[in-house]
Image 1 (tube, rainbow, N blue to C red):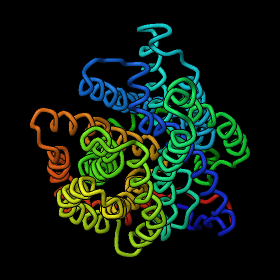
Image 2: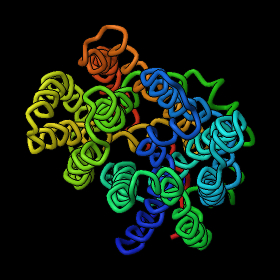
Image 3: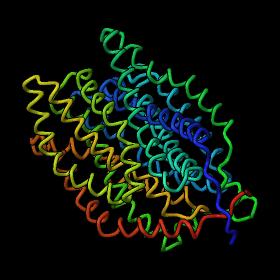
Image 4: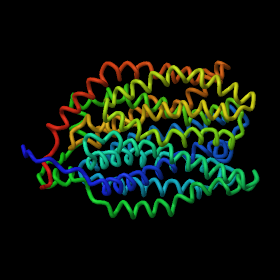
Length: 450
């Protein structure tokens, strides 16, 4: 084995790599979460129902459908990233997401074309899910393969924070439109604006990504003939890979999915559909939490570089579980009393704890797989975890509230869902963490020269 070591990217180059990767990822999450911010309006325009509860559940189900499409994107694009390159793949996924999002902004409504409208909306939501299923893994691996080994947690955690930034941008634009337009204008054309404004930004981001270079790890494997011809097959037929995937699904990824989609996505539905908070008020309270939590991602990511990824995630999951029920109960009381500062503060607590769970995740999963199938393994672990723990969490939680009449039944479900995540992270995550650190040195490909 070549004893030379690949030199990590210079700080200025690393900053550019992270910024470019994060911009595309942020835009993809913005496109995806615009639907969350507009679920109520889109449900009225595309999925009309006389029963408000049924309409709300159908709208949330349409959000969840996109998660079933994510593994399709992973199966298509993640092996592609391992075969033809990380850069080429996330250029394609970004463009695909942009096309689907603009398409939603151009759709005729149910009142204009009948049942064809929700069918078209569903197809485009599935397309968004496919694009996002291939995007994130490629972006994470791109950053991991440039980053110094002792700072991977910090650098990849920035990518995690862009999910919140994308949602924040979606909430800000939708809220601004709601405040400046009357209800008729917003329903007539204002809802289309958030989808359409992404078009020029996606075009610019795609051009920027086209100018990026492939990672040195991939270039070396390509030059030495070490690329896998069938990374998907290599991953699903490997007992070692499946162990890593299962630990990620039921540990780190499960914890991330539950905490994120409870603290942010379900939180919006809880405020609007359960507590009947006006959408702009709900969006602003959640936005405060995101703004405060976002700078904490690199802090927790750097902490994971120092004390271990699994340890940081374990502490985050444990404290989140302890805080979630009293936080939701306090939010309900705050809404009843009009104490919006208290509501925003409690949402912020959950958002910061979510950042603690999420920040170490990308480096943790990426380090579990060899470079030849790294994107494929990462994508499968992330998307299967999202389906099991995240995509339909809002639907299940709202259904439990409707069935039991208990407004806090949804958060109780989230806490229960985290029990296996806590156990797996403790019993296997710590062990996986130590093993991946040892094997990374042994499995690293030879350098591209001095």
